[in-house]
Structures are given as structure tokens and as C-alpha cells.
Length: 177
Image (cartoon, rainbow, N blue to C red):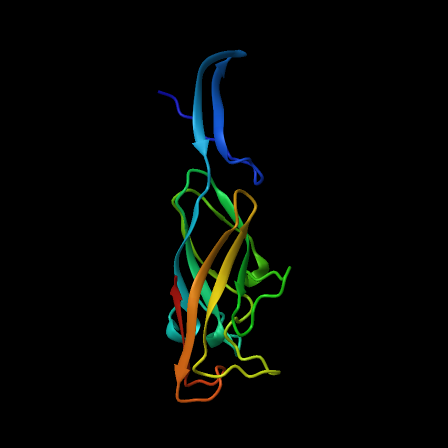
């Protein structure tokens, strides 16, 4: 038995693909295979509650950051181009590159990784300090080059004995819906 591997281009069309084994210009065998990525968010992390993760601790605001652990459970590769947090104290602006180091991440089938936001979604913005004790439903979106973008809703809340979310004693909780 002979096996052959090949790389798919970044913008391939997911779905049923026909693979033809040929020799000397003659088709020997034809198979139809499904090549389709499927991104899943495994876990959401708030930096204040998970200091052992790989946060950019050179940033003075790292404790107000968030990250997501993702897995590609599909049968084709996927490239993640952006990580957006919406309806948080400091939401990601439209068209802002928000992956740490502004690097795209490609996941092969079965691969997992943790993506870190470049902007801190849980820092209290200066104009309207966010009160500690706030809660809301946020959204996290992963944009991709192939297939559908992934958006999930999550609940976030802040608690503690201090008035504002940006203070050390105010903790952040994130839970998937």
C-alpha cells in the first residue's frame, strides 16, 4: 500500500473532495473524501484567575486579559486570523487585530491551542469606570480563512470588595453558556 500526503492551500473550499490516484496520466482509483475544519472553544480563561498561563506579563495590564483554548475537531486545517471579545468592559474594536503578536494560527485536524487576546477585554476603561460587581453576557468570535467563523456567548462577572474592575481585589469570572 502506498500513501501520499499533500498540503491544502489556505483558502480551500471545505466539503466533499475527489481524490484521484493516477499513474502515467491514467486514473487508477478515485475516492471522495470530506475535508472540513470544525473549530470548538474548549475553555475560556480570565487572566486574574489563571496567572499560570502564558500571559504577556511585561504588560502592566496583563491581569485584565482573556484567552480561549480551541480545538479543530474537523477533518481539514483551519487558520484563525482574529480573536474578538464583544460586550466586555473593553470590547475589541471592529477591524482591530487582536491575536497576541498579530500572528495567524493554523490548526491541523485534532490540534489544540490557547489563543491570547492582544487587548485586555476586562480592563476598566477610564471614561466610565466599570463597577466591580458587574455582570453581562459577552461574545467571543474567532475569524478564519476557511469555513465559518465561530461565535459563542459567555457570561462574565466581577466580584470583590473594591469599587472598580481594574483594581487588584476585583476578580473576574468567565463561563461558557
